[in-house]
Structures are given as structure tokens and as C-alpha cells.
Amino acid sequence: MSAGPVTGGSDDEDHPEREDGEERLMRPLPEPVRARVVEYGSDVLGGMRPSELPPVLRRVARFEPRRRARLAGPQIAAQLENDPGFRRLVAARVDQVWPELAEGMRAGIVPPAADPVTVAACAYLLRPDGWPGMIEDVHLELDRQHSAKEVDEAAEALENVRRELEEARRVHQRDLERQRATIVEQRTEIAELRRKVHHERQRAKSATSEAERTVTEFRDRRGEAEGRMNGLELENRRLRSRLADAEAQVENSRRAVRTGRNADEARLRVLLDVLVDASHGLRRELALPTGLDSPADLVAEDREEQRRVSLGGLPDDDPGLLEHLLTVPRVHVLVDGYNVTKTGYGNLPLADQRNRLLASLEGLASRTKAEITCVFDGADVDTPPVTPSRRVRLLFSAPGETADELIVRLVRVEPPGRPIAVVTSDKEIVQAVRAVGARAVPSLIFLRRLD
Image 1: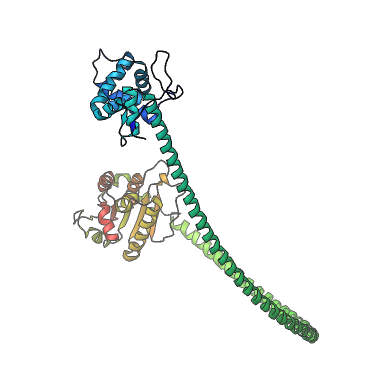
Image 2: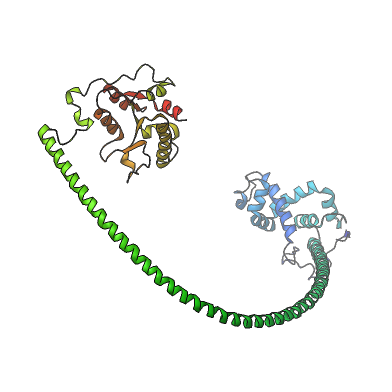
């Protein structure tokens, strides 16, 4: 942007005038100048009294200056263009902020170091003589700066393209050299393969000759083998004939043995029939019963509440309680299965709980020789598994019956005097079995003995 006096000249094309003699712009303000003018107008708008505010700008007058410029920029620009009074207020503010610049522009002098955008904004607001020319000069200066910037960017882009092209050339040269080296290696490998193919052909010829010799020898040997095979077949037929004769002799011997054994068995059967008839006659003569009652059938209802052999002497929390009970002769240990497993390892699936407890009970039964019965609730088992153990009796409650009821029923059917220990921590089962004379053992004490 040139310094010194700025005159409009007399050319109507450079400085066209309105019909009323006022100067006007040849083209719209540059965007940076328009934004600066709107910014100045937004600043002044916030300090005006409500009565002085233009009606179209009263709505945004209370906003923050930047927000006013962003939301009402077109309205502020139109007001500055069409309202001389509002423009004079903004120009007065410019006089306060840029006094030297405003004074120089009124005198037709523009400082050479001034910002072109500021100069154009002040010229538009102050409107000294020749202000359209000043703005046009700024317009040209901004176009020149923009063009120079585009030229610099184009030059920089061209330089980047040149660098990329040079790099691509170097990469291409490296690839070309690498391909040439690969071709040399492949040619060497081809020569080596050709040499190996020639060698393998020679070996194939030698192998073919050897195979022909082998076939000839095989044919000769096959003739000899066929002669020997015919002799072996004759010998085999003679041996088979002798074997058939031997088998016939063996069968005759077996038939004679079976005949003698059948006679012995007949005599033994007659003797057994005589003994059975004699035993039946003796049973009738002595009036003996035909069968024996089970222990549960012998228990009379009036003696059901009889006290059993005492298993007391130690408190329930005594660690040696189970050892004491296992030493009692003919003791029967009933185990409430799920009560024990859920006390010790309830985080396992039910099938794993059962398997672990049965394995522990198997070891305990083998060591102590005690009779052990383990009872599980059968409600969650579709087909109760059959325990492979011969030392531990495994029972599942039937449909409609709980494991607790089955345990109490097992205690009740035992004959009086039989020592019984029930391993459970269920209070209802403890009360029920104690009422019929059995001793309850807490599940935790039992688990410690198993461990």
C-alpha cells in the first residue's frame, strides 16, 4: 500500500458518485474490512443509550461484543451503510482510537506502515475525500497479498512435488538395482538347477537299469518259489489229513468222558433230591417258620421310643467326638450328604459335591470298618447314580420324600441297642434323631476328621 496523499482523480470509472454527489464504492468491501467495520460497530453499539439504538439492533445490544458481531453482523453492516448518524458515532470512536490515522486520512495522507485493513475500515467510516479510492487501493493490496500467498503456496507445493519426485526416483533406482541383483541370483540358481537335473537324469538311467536287472532276478526267483510252494502244499495236505484224524480221536475221547460225567451227575442229583425231601419233612415236623423277619419288622410300635446304646460322654464341639463314636462296636453312621458338602465345599456343582464326599467316605469306611450310609435329596437327580463302592451305602430320597424324612425313617427301623450317629447340622434332624436315641455329630467336626 503506497504512502502519501490519496486522491480520487477525475475519472468517473475510478470514483463514481451517487446522483446526490456522494462518492460510492465500485465493488463490495473486502471480507476482512467488512469484518473490521462490523467489529467497530459492535463495540460502539454496547455503549449507546437505549433511546439512541437503531430499532433493528436493540435485540442484540445487550449481547457480548463478539456475539453481537457474530449474530447480527449483516444487520450492523447494513445499518452502517444506510444510517449516517450511526456511522458518525462509530467514526467518532475511530477518531478516539486512531487519532493520528484519522487526521492523516482527512488530510489525504495514509501512513505507509498502517495496516491496510484498518486503513480501509477507517476510510469507510470517516469517509474523507477520495475514500472509495483508498478502499480500492486496499482491495488491490489485499488481492496482491493473496496472490503472493497463493504463489508462495504453489511454489512450496511445487518444491514438495519435486522432492517427492526425487525421492521416488531414488526409490525406483534402489528397486531397479534390487531387481537386477535378484535376476543375477535367479540366473545362478537356474544354472545350479540345470546341473542338478542333469545329475538326476543320470541317476534315473542307472536306477532304470538296476530295476531291469532286479525284475529279471525276481522272475527267476519266483519260478524257484513256485516249485517250493507246490511241495509245501503237498506236505500241508498230508498234515491236514493227519490233523483231521487226531481231532476225530479227541472227539471220541470227549464223548466217552461226557457219558461218564452225565452218569455221576445223575447220581448226585438223586442224592440232593433225597436231602431236600428230608429237610422239608424235618421242617414240617418241627413246625419251623418258612422265612425270617427283617430288623425293621421285629421292632414293635410300643418299643419304638426305647433308648438306644448311649453315645454320650463328649460335647458336640469336641474334636475327638467322631473318633470316639467310630470305636463303638457295630456303630451305624448316617450322613446328611448335602448338609455336609454345602458346609465344606458348597461352591462346587452338586454332582462334584457328591463325588468328593463319597470318595472321602470310602476312605473312612476302609480305615474304620464302620457301616456308613450317605443320604442325598433325590429331588434334583433325574436318575440317581449307582455307587460303585461296596463299603458306603448311597441312598436318594424318593419323589415326595425329603432326605431329612428318609434319615429319620432309617433311624427308626434300626433295632433297639444299635448305636447310631447322624452327621448333620440341621437342627430339625438333630431334634428328631435325638428323640429316638441317636447321637448327632456336627458337619464341621465330621469334615475336619475327613481332612
